[in-house]
Amino acid sequence: MKIRDILKNKKPSVSFEVFPPKKDAAFAPVKAAVARLCKANPSFMSVTYGAGGSANMNTLDIASFIKDECNTTPLAHLTCVMATPDKIKDEAARLTAAGIENILALRGDMPSDATIPPPGHFTHAIDLIKMLRELGDFCIGGACYPECHPECEHLADDIRHIREKVDAGLDFITTQMFFDNDVYYRYLAKLRDAGITIPVIPGIMPVTNKKQLPRITKISEAFLPMRFKAIADRFGDDPDQMLNAGVAYATDQIIDLFANGVNAVHVYTMNQPIVAERIMANLGSIVAK
Ligand code: FAD
Image 1 (cartoon, protein in one colour):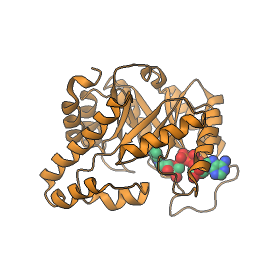
Image 2: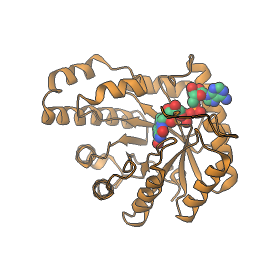
Image 3: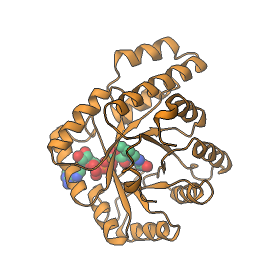
Image 4: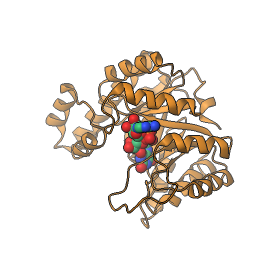
């Protein structure tokens, strides 16, 4: 099923993100986690893609597993940094052959061991979006950044680039994680002012381990409210308490988003079924079954 059709549902729904096994790592634990996550009834499940890495076939394998064995709609991430048009054509053909209709089209970040980019390589996600539009009848999503993409100096410029991606053919955009819903509401108002009318799915990261925080701040540069920091300070050294507090904080964010008119939320599960299951249990009858 195409995610653009799922998003027409007026009842609140939650989707999940997972990452595939890295390189030659075992598939079984990831598949077991994915199968459990699917049982928690997400509206769809996205699978990340390692930019320029060698584990990218694993994204297709896990997306196919989600579709064929878990009976859940998959969203395959695809990055274009360091890729040639021929490589993207191959990837799109593989996704089509596997019956995967939904792609999150991303630039990705240059790998740290990157050499000279190949001739004809892609510089921005918009080039990938344009190409995918020509290659098949995909439902295409993109990324957006409520607190501005780290490489862009001004939010207004970043939003102009998002508008260009939308005009190139996006069906929806998913946000980078944020921990203060007001950041999302202000951003959504700016996107709407810029003429962007497609769904903007908020990305929620349940923080259930204090050790996640430095990486989260590094990749997202997200503002951490005092209320959030106090939780990490008070409960961060006890894994069970931090799990309870992190699930409660994420649930609170999601309920506030639904209460304010949002219909679809994406949860970065970090392949942890327990976290997703407990959030879904907290939401109960609020979300579509
Ligand atoms: P772009 O849209 O190309 O934007 C990148 C930067 O370029 C921005 O600063 C933008 O303002 C600027 N820009 C865009 N167009 C132009 C232009 N024409 N001229 C000048 N500047 C321009 N990474 C992975 O490797 N794998 C994943 O699976 C993955 N999943 C993600 C999922 C979500 C929901 C999000 C939010 C991010 C994800 N990322 C993933 C991270 C993402 O790849 C990085 O944030 C990357 O730096 C930017 O990707 P993009 O698609 O937003 O790029």
